[in-house]
Length: 112
Image (cartoon, rainbow, N blue to C red; front, side):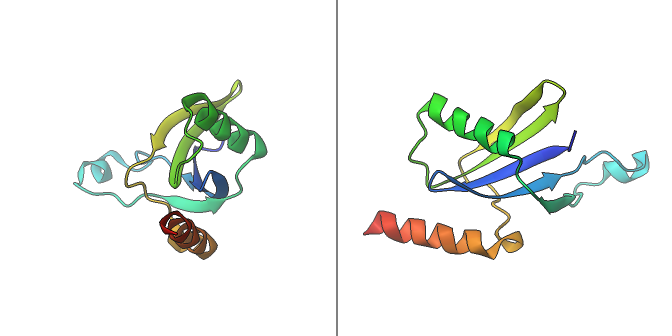
């Protein structure tokens, strides 16, 4: 379908999405280095993907998370969870500055 979709949430609300391309889509000789830059790009979060992620939060009773990244892949049957990033996730804030503002406001709100 779309590769890996990373959905970013702040205070339980969807903020933005990224597409993460395959890391092994290069020549074999280029795969043996110690580091390979991720191939990521902004994406529109599909409604059904966002709903799927929110259902995961509800199922796990994670309704009060400050932030999270939900990494999904899709196929003909729908979305599947790859990773649920709750501790030190990359939130790709440089791709969506408004999310950085929302995160700062959420932190401030929790400190009040």
